[in-house]
Length: 373
Image 1 (tube, rainbow, N blue to C red):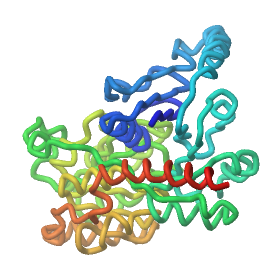
Image 2: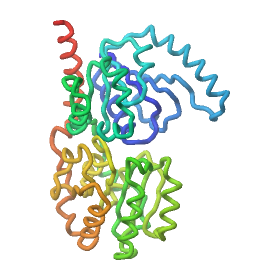
Image 3: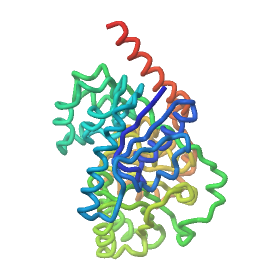
Image 4: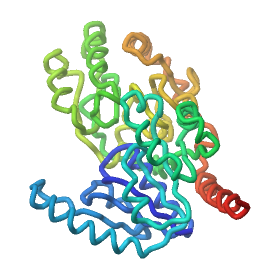
C-alpha cells in the first residue's frame, strides 16, 4: 500500500517517537511510505529509515518574517506538485491540527485520523469541537492508540463511534544489554534512590509543578537519600527551574535536558515516575517496562492497559496527595519495588507485526465496505 503521513515537525517527544517507529515498520513490511512535514529541522528525522520518503512543505530558518513569507510562497508550489500524486491511505498524525491542507492537496482513497490523547481532556481546552464540526465526516477512520483513548472519542463524538478503532503504538526495538552497559547518564546519583521522569516540559499535560511540590515534602522527610532527574525540554523549562531553586531543591531535583536515547536513563533508574495529568498511551511507560524498570504512574487514559497496579508498577490517583503518599511509602521501603522489575505488559501491546496487520486489515475492510455501497 501507498501511505502518506501528515505531521507538523518531528521534534523529540513521545508522539514523534511512535511516529518514527510506525513509519519505519510500515516501510519494513514493504509499504511505500511518505512523511509530509509542515516544517523541516526536527531532531528525530535522522532516525527515519532510508525507505521513508520525507517531504518538507517549509524549510526551518532563522525565524525572520522574510524567511517565513518566502517559505509560505514556496509551500504553495510544493503543494501543487503534491496534487499530482495518489495514495491509498493518508494519515493525519495530530488530532486538532488543521487537516485542511491534507484534504485540499492530497489525493487518497482513504483518510485516517490518529487519536493520541484523551479526547475528553483535550476537549476541555476547546481544541476539538470546532475541528470535528468542520472535518469529522471527512475521515474514513479514527485510530486511538489505546482502548481508553478510543472510548473517550466515542463518548465525545457518538455519531462517529462506528469509525473509531484501536491500534496500539509500535514499541521500540531495544538492545537492553547495550543500554545497561552504556555510560550512566545519572552516575552522580549513585548511592541514592534515583527517580527518573522523562517528558516534554509542559506543565499543563505533564504535571511538572506539582512534582516540585511533592519533591519538597519528600526532601523535608528523607533529605538527600533520593535524587529526582527530569529529562526533556519544553516551554515550561525556565519556570520549572525557577521553582526548583526557589524551593531549595537543587541538590535533589535535576534537569537533564533532552536526549535521543532515553534507555540508559531507564537502565539506571530505581523508579520511573510518569505523573502526567493526561496521556494517550504513554510511550515512557512502554519504554520503561521494556527495560523491566518499576513504574509509578498517575491514573491517566490508557495506563490500565499497560500497568497492573501492584504487579509491574503502581497506579495512583491523579492528584498530588496520592503521588506523595505512594512515593513516601517507596522511599521508606524500596523493597516494595523488588517484584516489579519485570515487563508485565499484555501480549497485545508487545506484538508490533500484529499492529501493522491491523492497519492493513482496516484499510481493506473499509475498501470492501465502499465497494458494497
